[in-house]
Length: 420
Ligand SMILES: *Cc1c(COP(=O)(O)O)cnc(C)c1O
Image 1: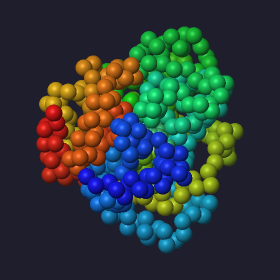
Image 2 (image 1 turned 90 degrees about the vertical axis):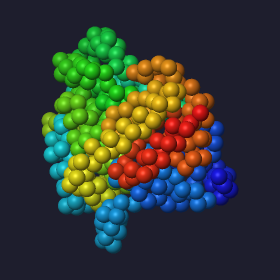
Image 3 (image 1 turned 135 degrees about the vertical axis):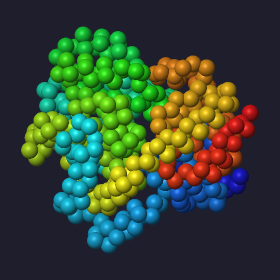
Image 4 (image 1 turned 90 degrees about the horizontal axis):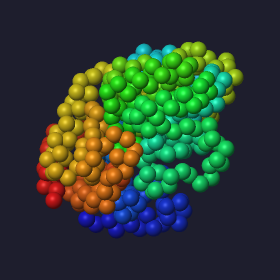
């Protein structure tokens, strides 16, 4: 594989940006390579600047549920651009997007649009604190909720990959209000509620963890979280930045039939543009400025182009909900192929899956961390050489989209089965 041009661009980028990238996992550090620079993408294929084409299972880390350059989204965005890129004033389309979210996402009665998942979770936590008048929050080891100070504690993905337990530059005082429990471990949660009665504002959880690799909730775990938060007057926040509109139109909350108090979304709802959202019960959302005392704002929030991309994406999903069945079946084929290698443990929920190079069942951060990351790096290299682009980290999901053709799924299955 010729990667000369990528290499040149990367060397240059490294003189301009930390690690040559604008988000750490893109740097391929965990797989001992340098990143490919992308020229364009269409459907399920992504092409680098040297003309190498790959079947893409990163899908921009989740947004690409319809595949790249989906015609309906691109056309609508092109039309919207001619009317101006941003006004800093409300538009009718923002309400259309809000209406879809409110009508489809359990627990969301009011919503606020923001620019990134990081912002969405940070703002949801602030609203929950404002609403309850309490300071403490609970998160889980290995769950990632963006890079805001208070949530950058025992997070997944880039932090596991880069072996940074916490980030430098975060004052200890900022994380003193963050309590950490073990995913899928009810006792670890119960202990915190016993130790800090009436002090916990919010419990934030990825209802399907997907930033330590994919780790599904054990049966009864989400029900338990719903019950204990309700009993303690704590706001239950589902961070559905990955799972929202991916596990179904109603996200993980719908998939597992649990009603959270607040939900954060991102990735898919922006249709490939920078857009995210947080929402929840009216009582909680009414604490947000300008009608409440919890301040949160954004110059480009609800940007008309991003909203257009999100709206068209959600319309496409709403008009053909059988998409979810299709992507589930395709992911199941890949799961079967991975299992047949006898080298990995596979976790899958719908179109999200991870192959862990370990013998252990993976149920939380500690078991995910038993994975042989060198073995993953080797597998990554093999896949890339065979035209398949997967996440350059053991601790990320593989994303299947509606654009993955049966032919490309079959090709992927054959490449996986031939892995020695
Ligand atoms: C990606 C992600 C975030 C952060 O979203 P950004 O848009 O990258 O800031 C937050 N929570 C979860 C669960 C995510 O997967």
